[in-house]
Amino acid sequence: MDRKEALDSVEANVENQNLIKHMLATEALMRSLASRLGEDEDKWALTGLLHDIDVELTEGDASAHSQLGADLARELGASEEMAHAILCHNEAHGIGAETKLDKGLICADPLTGLITASVLVLPDKKLASLKATSVGKRFKAKSFAAGADREQIARCSELGVELDEFIELAVKAMKEIAPSLGL
Ligand SMILES: [Fe+2]
Image (cartoon, rainbow, N blue to C red; front, top):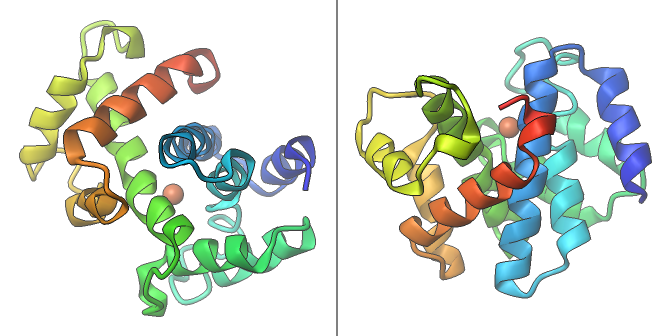
């Protein structure tokens, strides 16, 4: 599967630019996490890039979200392993995370949301000004960006990565693509 084809498909299926940015952020974090773990960086990155491709198509139907996404990913040439990670990242299906890739997506997805929310409350709203330690504090403030599931984020420990390191790695990965995120 080629990255350009994947991104073209994301852009064809998603209108909301913030949702596209969320997928770009998840792509960057998944690449960085794969690199940290010695896993296949392109495979992890593409899984992150595609994981919410069906959100608008499924119009908030939690039972359909990520089923369709997994199918669209397969059509683009994703492996079964990638399709499974996309499918099970929606916990509504009750399919447990099995592989490292499954777990990586489960913990990376909400962390990008927490980081974006942490940037948007900064005076200059710039990723460059964000410190990983302040994201760590936001993580503990449960009412802040409550949609970013802290339990899912904390599952980085199942991959042998402690929370502080995971947050640091994520902030760095997102800073590297800050212009594409508009942050
Ligand atoms: Fe997501």
